[in-house]
Image 1 (cartoon, rainbow, N blue to C red):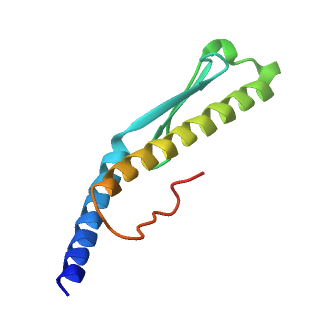
Image 2: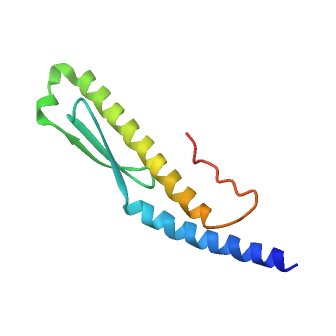
Image 3: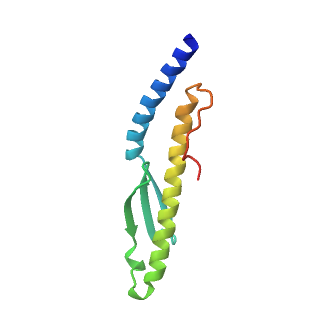
Length: 109
């Protein structure tokens, strides 16, 4: 019976720490570039794009398609890195607890 109470306490503690981690991840960022740094995209731990920097040399009305491709490449890489950062942080947190069968969905691509 006491094992069940201990497990419930661990789960509650884990939930509280996950809530705090989600808040912390909002302020953590990752950056990715494409085109040798011509386009740089920053994403946060909520997997939201928070900044895009474009080198003025890339802005050519005749090469809009290339710029679009660079933005997509940098954005996708930034989001992949954000997902990786979240997975690492959650895995670290989950390692603090011994909760049988704990599986956290959405941490793999």
